[in-house]
Image (cartoon, rainbow, N blue to C red; front, side, top):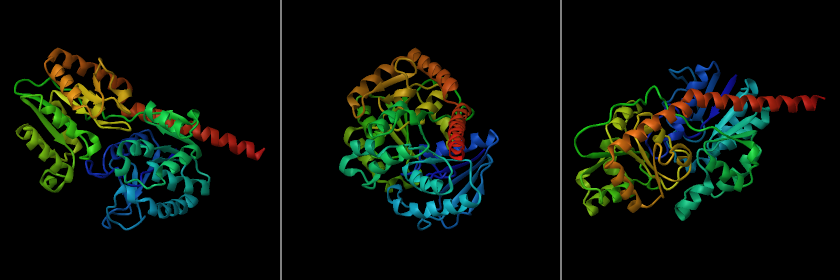
Amino acid sequence: MRIELVSEHANPLGAVGGVDAGGQNVHVAALASGLSRRGHDVIVSTRRDDPRLPHRVVAPEGYVVEHVPAGPPTEIPKDDLLPHMDELSDHLKTRWAADPPDVVHAHFWMSGLAALSAGRAVDVPVVQTFHALGVVKRRHQQDRDTSPPTRIDQESQLCRSVDHVVATCRDEVDELVAVGMDRARATIVPCGVDTDLFTPGPPRKGGPSRLLVVGRLVERKGVADVVTALADLPDVELYVVGGPREDGLALDPEACRLRELTLRNGTAERVHLLGARSRSQMPKLIRSVDVVVAVPWYEPFGIVPLEAMACARPVVGSAVGGLLDTVVPGMCGVLVPPRRPDRLADVLRELLADRPGREAYGAAGLARVRARYGWQRVCERTERVYDGVLARTDERSLGVAR
């Protein structure tokens, strides 16, 4: 099968941890790699954000990344990319007219707009994964939401126009149904985790208890809530991975805000901002702590909890989005209400005092990840969605022919 993934702002070859670089980059890279290993011809189209980037790169895993000219070749916040989607669509339309893929899988709503326009022009079916929804972002960020004002309406139209939606969790399907999608038009395929890279290790011994937060340094990730909770957890250390490299943290607004908070609540000596780390470093970091904390205010899916579970570490997460599917309370971790540092402190205090409980959560989480969330399984399920879309496309074509 010839498959095109369109990911306008999240380059699968890009570094993870910046403001607009996170789980989508990981997801697209892993999906492209897995589909390539399954014998498919895979191209990922992403916007050129650096003039030095070559037009095409063959990734070590065998898929091709094409850097598409769409707007100036420089970094642009993803919320400002909408005016350049016509250029992206025109480029795809020209290439697909000469050499069409069998199926297109768009990642993020703006990718969907560009892919759907190009796909309809050349009669190529389009599958959509949103990764985040404007209606949820607006609900939580309100006036601070920097999304284009048309986003919610365009997402509503998009989920009713593409050939199929691949949603990453039940909560996402419910949100899309609320804005007009027929539930039958969506299939849930979760994000995955690399169980060859993220592997278990023995529980750490000795020293103060350690917590780990991993993610972009943006307010909605809830890192400040963990720092606030830490004030009620004496002798507990917190390590935070994300944001720019460590030497650039002094200029990062969220890092500065977090440092100011640690000074106010007396946790400065126990909070360690590590900056960005490579993915190859992450398993060792995860295995070096007692509990991984993921308490965003909202979360379309959340890959970090899966990575923690693959390393046999318990997760304390917020009861939102994809975490409602992945972290089973009382089995592999604990879920708490978002933006409740008081409740978070209580849960962490109890869990850090219960070594057998942590080990049981870690073992159960590892088993759950291996059974449900390996990338091979995720790619197989995604492939079945493509097969179904192509079968329905063929049926429609036969109907027209008759």
